[in-house]
Amino acid sequence: MVNDFALHQLGTKSAYFDEYNPHLLEKVSRAPSRASFRIATNHGFDIWRLYEITYLNRLSIPEVAMGIITIPATSPFIVESKSLKLYLGSFTQTKFENLDEVAQVITHDLATLLESDLKVDLYPVEEASEIFAVKKIPGTLIDLSSGFVVDSLKVNPNLLVRHEGPRVEERLRSNILRTLCPVTSQPDHASVFISYQGMQINHLDLLRYLISYRTHQGFHEQCTEMIYHDLKLKLKLDKLEVICMFTRRGGIDINPIRSDFAYDASEVIRHLRQ
Image (cartoon, rainbow, N blue to C red; front, side, top):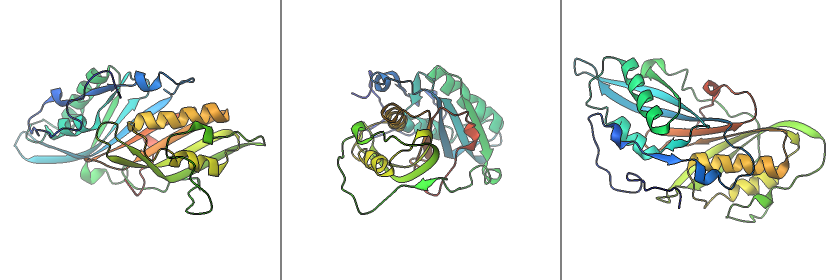
């Protein structure tokens, strides 16, 4: 069971509303997936980029926009992504004074749902090019296509082995992460950025570990927290940052960040696959 209550929108044939309807929003508790963790995983943010916002101005003329939602990892709930898509779609035939009013409504509804402060930034499409610019993920690419055997397609933290040696600061990246929706079993794909301080991580061990998520069912935020938790616990790293940059679905991409470093959420990279 992924949660202690039913999700009504996910995995069902949906009715689409084009008049404002905040009741479409659904939340998922973070608590069940964190119950087995031995260290805290609530350091960071979840960054949601919105590509398909449209509404009417007071003259009934359509307006379009893009946006970014920043949710702290300390929030007790996450918003279920399909419900957010349907909710945003309900703005389509609704009149608003301006984009600021739209942002205020979204902020209020999500803060009420998630019982947490959060930030909503909306931009006219013509002004969003720099903010949504594609950038290359920094760090050493660990992906290999040959020369090793895949040990497991079931998540296995024991694939991570701490090797004694000099302490390093290193940034790594991979494009192979694939997980499954815990309700519909639809695949989700992501690129991963890892920055750390501590004993050097064996790159092949890390790659095998990320590959082991290939049939794992979990929400984006839960998978990111598992990776952060396992790396920090098994490898006893001094500091760690994990960002999973999931590809877009339904006009939304999701980017959970779990970090021991001081972090500016506005600096999250949008990469080519998003």
